[in-house]
Amino acid sequence: MKTTNFTLTILGVLFLLISCQQGTSEQLTIIKGTFKNATTTEAYLWGNLSVSRSSELDENGSFTDTLDIDADGYFSIGIGMNSFPLFVQKGSTTSFTVDLNEEHPTLEITEGNQAIVDYLAKKSSTLTVTRDNLSELFGKEPEAFKQRWDSIFNSLKKDLSSLTADMSFKLLEEQALKFDEIYIYNEYPRRYKSIHQIDTFEVPAAFKDTYNNLDGDNEMYASSFQKYRWMITAKIKDDAYKRGGDERLTEEIIEILKEKTSPSIRDAVIQSIMFLYIPKENSAQIKEELLNLATGNETKKVIQDRFKKVSNLLRGKRSPTFDFENFNGGTTKLQDFEGKYVYIDVWATWCSPCIAEIPSLKKLESEYEDANIAFASISVDFEKNYDKWRKMVTDKSLGGSQLIADNNFESKFAQDYAIRSIPRFILIDPNGNIVSADAPKPSSEQLIAIFTQLGIK
Image 1: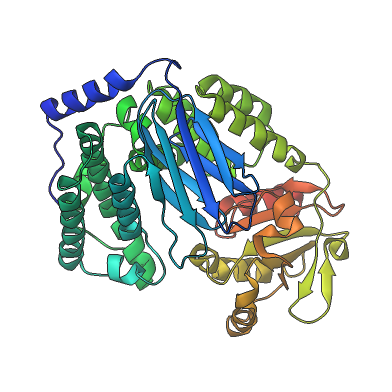
Image 2: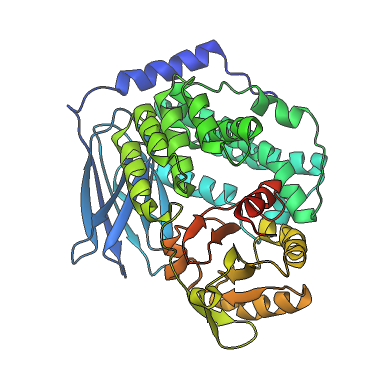
């Protein structure tokens, strides 16, 4: 991969074009849409960090939304399982229709630039990684990987060059493609290892150089480019983990954010950690510090909403309950374990990190077989994977109580515990109260320390 050099001239022109379009709320931006054959009454609009909202559709499947934005930018329109990329210019009106009955629904622009929408749709489709194309895109050896992605990005750059669009969009999109490319190359080692089920994989140093040398505190990049925000967020999380591990991850992230001058970076990282945040004893202090660091109203709302949702998951609170199918027959309730501590593993057959913890969990179950603790594994597999779940329990001789949730991630237990990512481990005391709503994983020495502190031995 070529080292990405951003010349002062290009950066200056891009910044000037964006700055000239920034301003106050004198110019309102309007988005109008009509969804033909919609089966839901709500559409979603999100863009960068400052806009995230829903709009009610009328009886014709139409909506109108008025935005107060500071500059041109990338947005997405979502309805049901469909999502459509959009580029919106400050002070403009963009109108579209889309027929959701089509096999591959696309936005038909009635007011705005159809060419830009078509380009962004093609780019999104090209860069989207699915189970079907994962091996083709990330499973190759370094030289073949480079050839494949060079071809993809050269094609996108050619499309952009021939596109009929304002220079401001073209310059912005050239920069976006650079960040897309850096992101793909940075993802390569992790994806390759997952595909080939290996622990280590060395890539040429040039694949990482640009990522490692990214400016980690650039407001213009952060306010405009999603992939840049993703990469800087990942960097900050990695640095925080090296400083304090899982136990102090949020606290260390806060300390790093205090050093950042870019409001958009702070907001991006805060929104990211709030997606999975589970409270600890010092949650009130963490909430106050995050609110002080946040700049945008949307980010502050995300903080308030998340803390409200997880307020019942503090230590000592009554645990949400379940009544799930047991692999051995019948159903099992949380109350069936009353009088014992319960260590719960929430997992799924498709989750590689979950499966990686199975050997450590089995060892734990064996070592604590006679202790005052029960082990329960709750699968959040989808209904279509029910037989796969039963087969994996048998093939891997999984112990403890093997249960399956009644509605995957949408089950009440998963919702009550705000489970958005797995594996997730939960520790409950003999009285049915929460010890930890986000307990250490079986392979962690911290878990043994907690067991010892609780007198579980």
